Image (tube, rainbow over all chains, first blue to last red; front, side):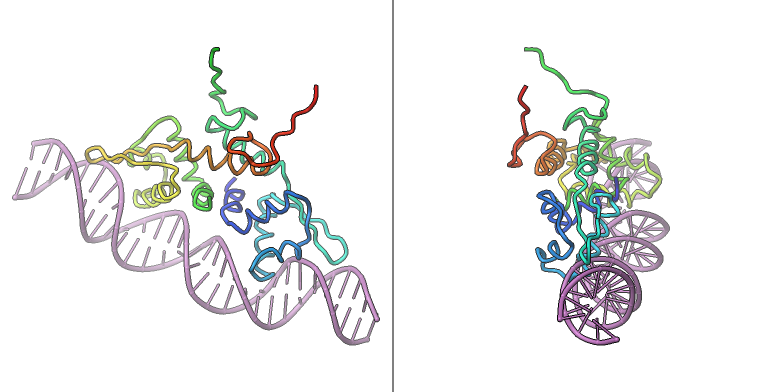
Length: 101
Length: 101
DNA sequence: ACATTAGTTTGATGATTAGCTAATTATCTT
DNA sequence: AAGATAATTAGCTAATCATCAAACTAATGT
């Protein structure tokens, strides 16, 4: 949980995820979208990988990153539901109040 | 957004929010629930306040902290919906796919 | 075999962070 | 006016973080 929120606490990493949402991309392709050096991007990728938010697949000399949607969803909605909003998935106890019509 | 995720990236601060979910608490009461010094807790509170996740109200010599539920909800679900899950509140473009019955 | 391309690792630097003790501010209580 | 209590600020340290350039690894092309 900490790793995930820490990963999300950087604008560059959030943007990487947003890009990855539309499909897998190579490290180089991703790096081109940001005004930072390749090593820096590599470090960001590493944080995202450690958090489990992305996975890699090496093909030839490229490394393809793809978003682990389920991990992001589970973390975000799981935490949200612990506060009573955002679905009652996996249960956050108090359950959604249903108003009488 | 960055401030909010940064605030959420610490276990102590997440636990503070969880406690605050059940109602307002004084700084001292909150601090008692953690094995760290009061100044350290004060710093955590400061981070949460900067992120807008909590508000304070001074009464006598106590400072009462209360959770800003809407801020947390907006941030979490807003970001989630940008990835297509967790409600289409405030809109995250692609809208929820509705399957034909 | 050699050069090129894609990406990561290493090592350094400046900034931020979580933690502490001690000092300070503000509000009671006696 | 003191003393006690609640909380924050000040000043410090150790650890982590984002960043870069340079060195390295691996795969492809000639």
